[in-house]
Image 1 (cartoon, rainbow, N blue to C red):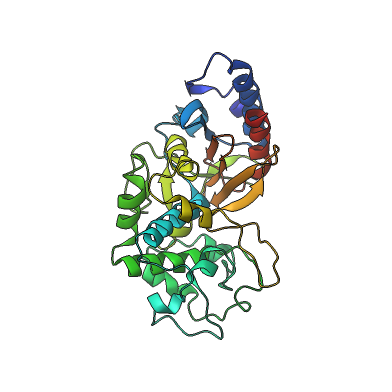
Image 2 (cartoon, rainbow, N blue to C red; image 1 turned 90 degrees about the vertical axis):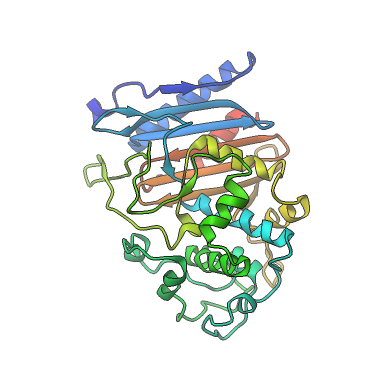
Amino acid sequence: MKLLFAPIFLFSVFITVAQTEPARIQKAQTIANDFLKKEHIPGMAISVSHNGKLIWSEGFGYSNLKTKTPVKPNETIFRIASISKSVTAVTLGKLVDDGIIDLNESVYYYLPDYPVKKYDFTVKQLAGNISGIRHYKNNKEYALNKKMGITEGLNLFKQDPLLWKPGTKYRYSSLGFVLLSEVIQTAAKIPFKNLVCDSVFSPLKMHHTSMEFSDAPVQNLTNFHKLNIAGKPVESKPVSNEYKVGAGGFLSTSEDIILFGNEFITPKIITQKTLSKLTTSQRLGNGYKTGYGMGLSIRTSINNTPKYYHTGGGMGSSSILCVYPDEGIVICVLTNLSGVSMVEFGNALEEVFLK
């Protein structure tokens, strides 16, 4: 491990920063290098914007350990994992604005053939993880390497009962977002991947972002890793994310995700009214705030101002997107290693850029 991580991981630096920022960037670089070494991450991209402009964007380590290919934040493609849920939420918001979907309508209104459960549940409850739809049962489901579309993917869970009466409990559910993506493409009468590209990626100029197809090569795609029992990064097993694209199946660069994150500060493709709905914590029937809106966790920053974020954990990937609307700051970190806890690192960068 010493030989692998001994060099200072500062490759392909892309920094656009005012003269008043060097000390802050230097501190963030130190924190990032320490994090990379501590977690044994092969490669990582970090991008930060202020008022819509990049102030720091840098690659650390390698996208390919064998060829020592450096990470470039404007080129290297990572799995963004569950940040995909935020993308799905914005796509949903666009359909709300267009009058195609009503958040308070029953899921059965859009999917009348979905197996009937003990309770009805709404699109809003589904997008807020309070519908009672279960999460993955086990690691086998999570790491499934069977190529199938969204509709076929429903077969994994559609016969299962709800875990509780909708609106009474919160539990994170990637399979809930699989069902939500089916609602979206059925209501819009457009395949989900086409709809997201046309309504989100294209207008935001996210030219390096796409759905992952397990059998299609992607230029500048990083290798994906996990740690073996010796704590050394090795390549992860293949996985097929097509059916769960709306939950965790998009590919992107850290700089593209910055463009996306700024939609939550200065919306271009959804209205301010709909943005407010996505970024307001849902409440259970007893009035308890869940801390999750639709596709975003809702918290407060160290400045006691609003903070919207989402972490991601997929096969060979760990990620985080943080948005601070009052400060105009967006932070994105993408890595090519499974199982990395990103919240603490996100908080460390928050300390640097919000103070």
